[in-house]
Length: 213
Image (cartoon, rainbow, N blue to C red):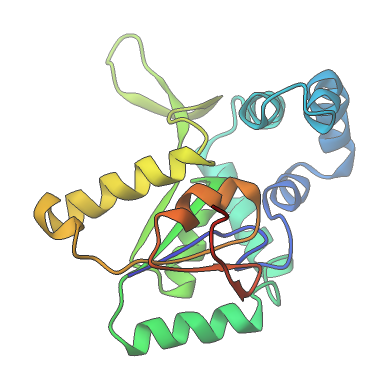
């Protein structure tokens, strides 16, 4: 089977920020960034963890947004920003895996707001990503259609990709079969290294990759 990172691996660039800009518009997006400046600067200086800075931006941009808004943002982003974003060599690799009957899974730190539509469009069997939290109704206990702005799962980055992918493999194929699966993995940042290390065949930024001793 094959596990593909999304941003920068399948695509030419990050997609989460353009998705937010497409939904909010530049003025509201920039105001959200201003409110997150201490965390974003800290991340740039490697003083703040990736997930902490990301959580701040998510709270500032997504809190209270409805499922209908997310569907509309996704529709516009897919129509106006996503075309032309898939790297040709990745499209070729995906076509080869499909021709071999391999299971293809997307493993991304981006949120489950627009990625389900992308995975369906690109023909992935499954999506493993950062999942967002929706508000619960105190009276009924049911979820509402408004985002809390918080992540429901840990940020799907680094070792979390390994944990989540292994859990999916065991759930999909069983613990006994897990040890016999040949895994291909594709990534483009240090956050993908743990997933690449678990693979039998790994590609980093389009080139075959071997972990350093």
